[in-house]
Image 1 (cartoon, helix red, strand yellow):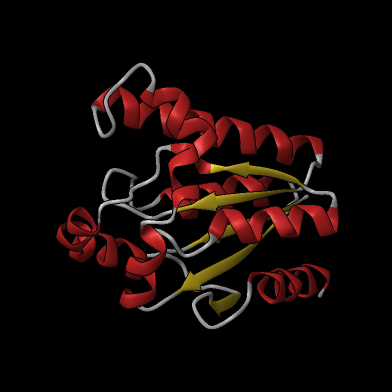
Image 2 (image 1 turned 180 degrees about the vertical axis):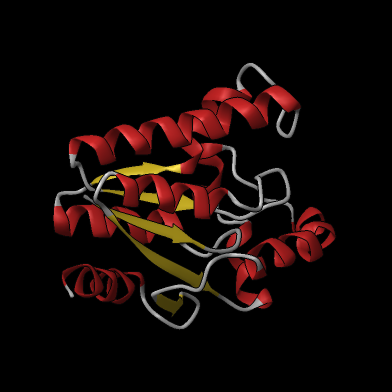
Amino acid sequence: MQLVFLHGPVAAGKLTIARLVAERTGIALFHNHLVVDAVAAVFPFGSPEFVRLREHFWIETIAAAAREGRSLIFTFAPEPSVAADFPERLSAIVAAAGGRVLQVALTLSDAEQERRLVAADRAAFGKLRSVELLRGLRPGLAACLAAMPAPDLRIDSGATPAGDAADRIVTAMRA
């Protein structure tokens, strides 16, 4: 089992790139908003039950895939309501089941992030679209990104077309 743990800041293109990797490999895509949106339909974002259930669904789904040898791509946006040790615990679960994790970090400039943030396609999953709110959240988000495990692959998604980024990830998966 291989888990492609694709993480990066808001509007870095995680879902766009993950979809391309899934198309090129046939591997399932488990993007973070599938769970975020489901849990947020019942509990407010960041509330104790939201945080508990979101992590539970993420971990249980990925652990089940690891036990069954089903590779997948998981997109993740580090932010303060997620436990700081979540990536390490998830990696340990995958390793215990005999799988491996490919840590892929996307980066982009603040200017490019703000340009992308207002794109209409971001409304599909209730994603953050307010530049003003992003600017207020940026210090906390940056701290969470800095605490992520060292990536196996780092891609500047502001300077790398999505298709090229997906190709780099597929190549790293096969290495």
